[in-house]
Length: 193
Image (cartoon, rainbow, N blue to C red; front, side, top):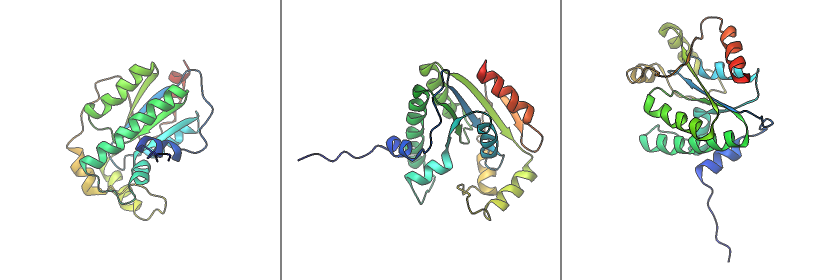
């Protein structure tokens, strides 16, 4: 009798990634950090138009593991443990990876710093910002979007704002209410260099 082997969370998330791009010789890890509504996902999509990234969007991956997320500490730990695992796997396979999550504290970002060190890939950090009035409007409009995966609202934004740590490493700072195409160009050049 063959034993049934249950898929790990990382295996479930990895199998949800469709149409992986071709492997590259020198993969890179890009961490996007920012509060809800600041434009992390839009920024990640714009960058993915320029290079073949695999984007690990925490809101989407959370819903794959739990269709009715509660954002508890246990759920977050489970989710990010799986994200760390597939991030490292993708980098070792030779993929460019974007981690699209709030990544607000150095404690949480450190996991990705360690993955970059272990895999020997270039690490690029992007802090995404927008004026609070713009964020509030974006979050209010989000509920009307059919494809929205995030349930963060203005109250979540205000609560999370209290926990933002300064990024202590070299990073790009992007205001998503301004034209940031030149920063996208800089990032692409840094990855290719």
